[in-house]
Length: 222
Image (cartoon, rainbow, N blue to C red):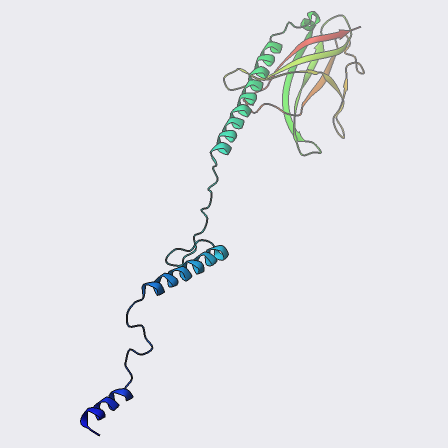
């Protein structure tokens, strides 16, 4: 065997290091790979949603709730409520002032009210009750069977805080508790005198705490 033949046999037994590999990039193979990648991408998006280049899922943006309409509605409601309260308070003050200036009954000049005092207690419901007590004397010549008085509570500015008309009731028993009755049951005869008590379930918080003014505005006679 010649030297040339030995060299050729040696070359046949050695594999090329490039065997089984792609020596050069084939453009057709690139197109096929791109098509397969696009198909896989569409399938993934149909199952999991859009996927970015970094394989991070895109979450839908959260819609923020606006509180501005609710705040505006609350302010309007508060303003309306305040206006109603102020209007009612003003109307009550005007009514009380008008009642306190009413013309008394002509026979009221014969009735004298004296020795006014005040006290407080709690009723069965736990509310505070205010009492005004005093004495009424009949200096006229007729028997009185009913008296309505105007009671005025004033504030620190001496303005009317509360004005209320109530029937006068005479005290007919003090022990074991104070019991009252209307003058139709206990008539006030001429030259007679009776103790009385007036009850108030509530008094205006604007009241200054001084004794109220009590004026006879109506008298029933016989």
